[in-house]
Length: 380
Image (tube, rainbow, N blue to C red; front, top):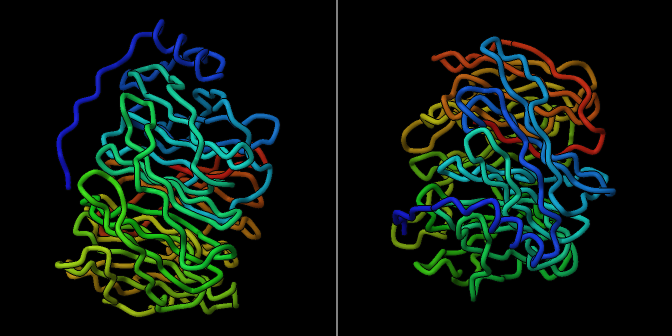
């Protein structure tokens, strides 16, 4: 499905005019002192505040220390509470855009990273109620909404403006109460997958050449409470299984996509334990060899090795720790694969780790002072 799409930068005057037409106040540029601009060495999260959501950008030093670098209003409202999801903040594959869900105002904001400048280019309806997770592949963007009946909705990113795709709105495995945890596009963009915590289902769809979706395929999760997912560049899918938060019971499963039917999921490794509690979030290194899982109930990070065929094995149940009672949540890996960042939900901090070539991680620093309502994390 992949194709090459070239995006040109719109002028500031046009952006201001567009924002006014769309009912969004023109957003001032946030200037960076980083010589490489905002497309390298940054960590992104959202404030998720009901009074007005903001995208927060932190610069990473060579030692891994994070410093608030820029922030800008999304034009929407956050929920003011946790979303129980992965993917509330997502970077585009080409590194030029950041997508943020505004759960309270049922919208998605798109920021363009223009060198040293952070620019709000659009805010659009999420196509449903209470968006919690957004994903992108080659200019195709999908969001999952968890309120009402629950649904996914798709958009095409046109120079930072999200245009709805006809035939892209689809329901989940049940009408209401599915409890989605994340929506994710496969690396080649041919499949869309949603984890459903409440039904123990993985709902997947074939993505057609125009970005619309085929019929939903319902797969029973290998383990209970499938929460978050991550694809590597071989289209191998990892899914965390929180098992209702039971102590020491968490697992991770891996799947591959059916060659003739890319939306059909086939189990490779079934529910491999990490011996920790409430494994919820997951990230895979750019080379696809290692995965890291944050265990909210154990305040730990577990590491897995990922084989070329998608088989996984636990390397370390406690590869890293985020502090007693920290409740680690969102996790991301920098695009160079050298840094792992974890947002901690109870201490309102971000833990930074260095990633070695053998997959081991070492603590670098801890950023304090996050908004208590913050959700999502992404890194470049």
